[in-house]
Image (tube, rainbow, N blue to C red; front, top):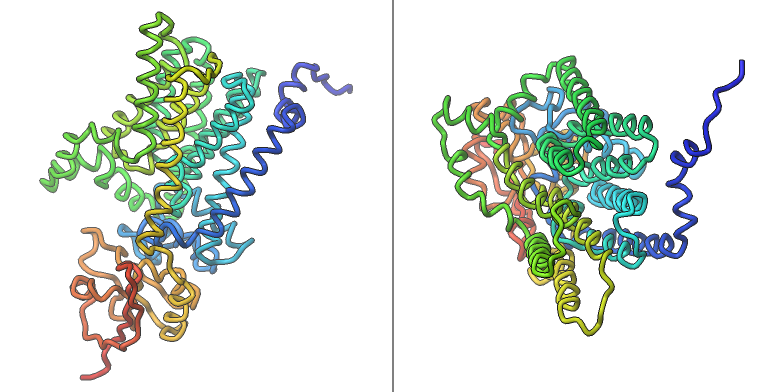
Length: 507
């Protein structure tokens, strides 16, 4: 039986992305150079910013336990014990991180470098997508788009803080690239497959996807219906898979409590207000306008977009269905919508910033830069400020505060005072060092929710490496008598001021 023939157009649709590297040679080489510098710079400054903190440890610990052979569990989660299957809101990142650790081991750099690589892959996907969708036709502007994206405050915060946000950016960037595929059945199939990972990458992407796809339906109308249905089918399949995963591992209840029952979701806020009479999280809705000022790059971009829109309106060139219009609609609808459906912290700002940035550069594509035009120079200054407010500002501020830490000193403190047989209550800043010793490590937020009256098995804790200023608070949960060993680290940074305490053996 003869094999079915694939048309030349179908082959071109499938392989067109590979040909772009050849067709845009100098641009691709220039971007490769940017990515190499980006990777080397981040690897060499990974301890300058940020400090090892709560969120990083919370999503690293399940991966570390999986890597060390202790199962997909965590002692940095407030809703479950260390023996339960971890039921977090973003398991995809922790699973990828565990695989990454099998390649590069367990360390601060190994954990943080995954986000650097994921960000590079996301940037490549966005670059390919804007070419294939013909959004930005100028090579220089495409390079500028990627450069500003990497330096902007929200994106910089996402890939430097050790959270899962780079995974969410990657999934959305992959969906954008899939949307550029010309063949309908292949495009819809790819979108459905990618959408399966949306809920596993981060549950807040459900809110973002609904809002973003609704805007696309409004602007593209019937031409986006098939794609929207494909994304919905994939996302539903992803939710079913995620719920099945947690149900079969006995963690579904913990998952529901830690997501829909927590105060960072609208259901949790309403539930706590009705059942527990806690209304403080409902009261947060009065601060809705603050969603536009979570970081420093986005307000500048938004002001720039509004300024361009006003200029175009006065010139009679403003079009309702245009990239600029869509970017502005996204900039207002996404922050407000996601905020009311849950929360909108700084690490969600990329959801509005990246679409707006792409739409602004798509608008620039209609312009020719004029050195004598003051407005054009004003735009350049605004874009430079967007960059300066991100990576340069945060690293400069961290360096001026002395945030860079001699982490080998932390490791030496831990290694000299902890054995693999210890049960350790560790401050977040000492987490990586304590975990490497093989000891059982618990974090300050472990079982901190109202579900647990106290820390399970707290009597087994033999040593604490904590900030001495938090001793009184810690003892209210741990109890018992503790001796100050006199061993510790004094730092100008309070987060890295550590003291070792041992359980007292005196009667």
